[in-house]
Length: 66
Image (tube, rainbow, N blue to C red):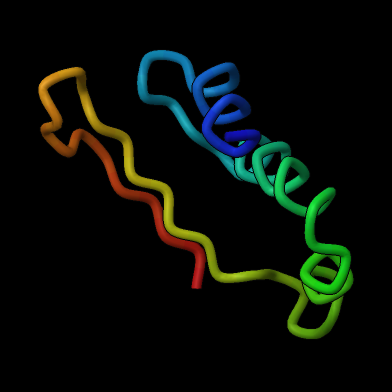
């Protein structure tokens, strides 16, 4: 629920950048400290998939960080 709330509060007009992804990651790092530490290991990024849907459930944008 925290990730959902963070994403809905931060993503405006379907625009997502690395700064927004980092802030959304903070929402789940609070619950999983092991994952929080893992995000700071080499190569330095955690794989993330963000999918943005409209209110009809149609996928508008997909952003991957592998």
